[in-house]
Image (tube, rainbow, N blue to C red; front, side, top):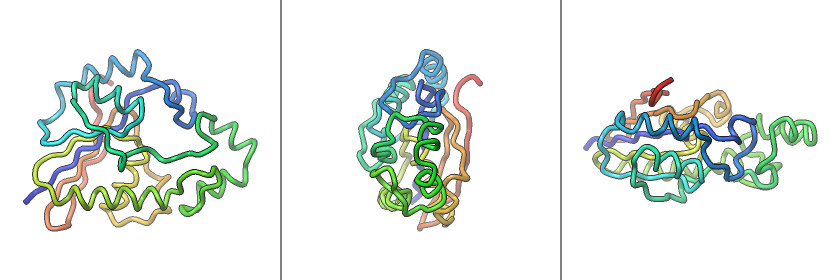
Length: 190
């Protein structure tokens, strides 16, 4: 049995443009248009899921997907940093920001650590590997990072070394617990 998982990162929104931790901002008009232009580029899916965030739901809708919210695919809980810019947090809490970027167990924002996120995503991916066919999911970039680490057996310390641009697809395919990875295919017009 072969399982395929296609993870699509959300299109552009104000939070991404401003280097701000997600605050529930909707897609901007350019992000919506780009996602709509990519709708025909997606393969058929047996299951379609989405992170239950505004930008992922809106991206899924613009792509023409009738996706179901999956709490296991929710983005990283940023606690009290939610909605703040990276510059603001780096200035106000330089030690906390440095710990968060270097220690996967750290959660100085009071939310979820990278380690906790990686465990949650690994559990979801292991369950999905038991399903035949293709799962397409629109997910936050950190979900793509965590899944990639799991598939490659890479350490959590590599989490921040993976760039996940907006509206890109990362595909995992495999059987018997062995995955192959197709990284960062752009969807829609550049």
